[in-house]
Image (cartoon, helix red, strand yellow):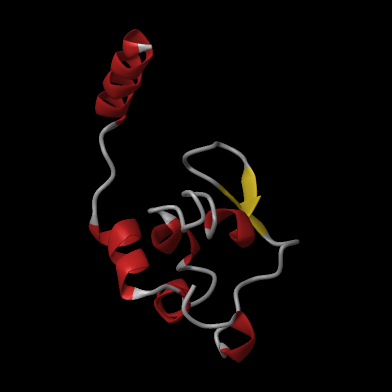
Length: 93
């Protein structure tokens, strides 16, 4: 991460505040969403958390340009493609 959250004037909601995750189907805190993707934010973090605080601005301050691009500018693979790739890897083993 590029900057410390302590120097960031935009503060995410406290961990006792949770919203429903559309991917998981249950409540999660922001701390989960910002590390869910192998240490990077979930690609849906902005759309999910924007109603609660300026999450895009917060994440732009937190992430390097490379992390931002990897997370939000590269669309995720369709689920079926991911499943096919996982099946192919399993067959190779």
